[in-house]
Image (cartoon, rainbow, N blue to C red):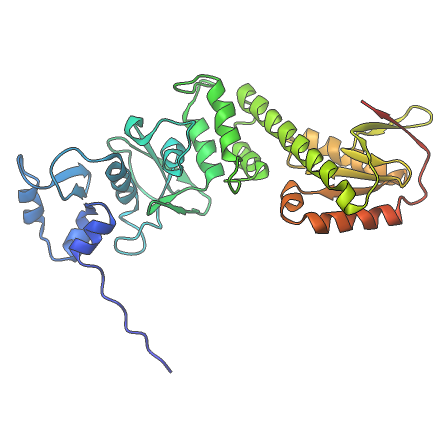
Length: 342
């Protein structure tokens, strides 16, 4: 049996360096600094200052934007499971997006408030510029400049909810265009900060799908994503050794009965492609409509292949092999259909 000797906690100097000179009263006491010494250092003209309840800056002068972020996070997380731990809170909303480097939100010096997510059972009040947002969901954190931030999709939803007033999105600075710019930047390269599906899930959870500007911006994202995927497929058809399909044809039976409008369709083989159909749906009614189209195509014998935009980008050869196999197998007992390109 092996034993691991626990490493000692960092010294006050090491902790202060790690947290940009921002520490909590609990962290100070754990390192032998009594309350009276803290009080003496924080007197007028002293070398320390109190930023928030039980949160101190070990220097004089105006705190930097990054130190304000540390103070907000430590204030909300100082009752976490571990002494000095920050797993009990994450920065979200516009502050998190500013830390991620979003150009669509004000930079850190211009931010006047910091939203912090904490577990629902935590008893904690707003303080100074810190606004506490409780959640029943398990906290997820991404380390950004050493600070715990909510994932991008959650931070976007919280920022938009923060800017929502009386049922209308009231965004600062750039007006209506900011909603579009914010959502576009959230899914932009490099590396896709988040997927459109993740964004839709968070906006739905935040009950923002009914906002006209949010929905319009999402529709633009869906259209752009679909167009990009279709362009990508068109450029790979020769490499995949596949014939050119019809793009977004309206499928009807000979008698005129409407079937569906798939993204791609090979009439000779009876094979249709739908690109991420479910994430494009922002209501149960739309989801039901999409599922109904797929069921109708399968009912009349069309072989339906569902493609993921992400998989198309990451595994193009596998997607090509899947489409080749589908075209080789073709539809089953295919009913004669009329395919009209819109």
